[in-house]
Image (cartoon, rainbow, N blue to C red; front, side, top):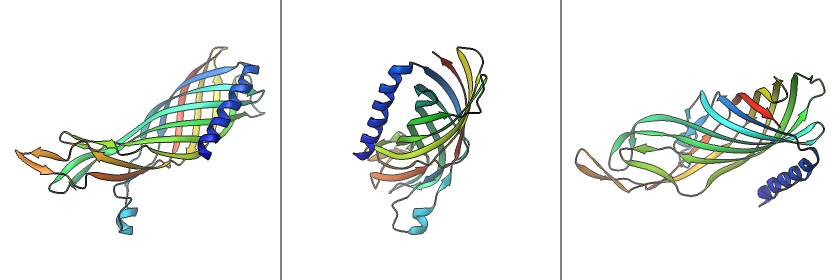
Length: 231
C-alpha cells in the first residue's frame, strides 16, 4: 500500500507541475544490459541448490520514455521497457520424465524518474542525473513439448534506480540520447504448467510438482541509445 501511494504521489505532483511548463520529450531506446542471474530453485531447502543460478548476460531490450518538465531544471520521466532472456536446461526433472526445456524470463519495467539538468549543460549537450522508483512485472518463459508456464500469481518487485543521461540536440525537434541506468530488480516468478501431463514418444507422462518457482535478478548496468522528439 505504501509503495502504491508513493507512485501515485509522484504521478500527481508531476501532473500539477507539468501544467505550468508544458514541455515534453518522447524517446524510443535500444538497451543493452550486461548481466543477470536466473535461479531455478530459489525455494529449495538445500542452501547450495537455493543459491545456485545461471548467468544470463548480454540482454537486448527496447524501451520508450515520456519526460515532462516540472521546474526549470527538473523533469519527470515515465519509462516502460520489454526485457526477455532465455536459456536451454538439459535433462530437467519433471517428475516422471526428464527433458530438455526452454527456460528464462520476461520482465516489464515501469519506472518513474526525476531528472535534474546539470549546470554544465550547453545548448547542444544536455546532461541529467536521475533517480526514482520502479515496478518490475515478471513472467516465466518455461516451455517444452506443448507445455508452457503461466503465472500462478502477479509476480513483481519494487525498487529504486538511478541514471546518468546525455542528450545531443540535433535541432528544435529531434535529439539523440545516451544513458547509463543502474537498478537491481529481484523477482520471484511463481508459476504453474499449462497442463499436468504430456505425451512423449507415444506415452503419457504426468508432471509434478504442478507449480514451481524461479527467480531472476537483473543486477547489471543498462546502456541506452535512443532517439527522441521534443514538443
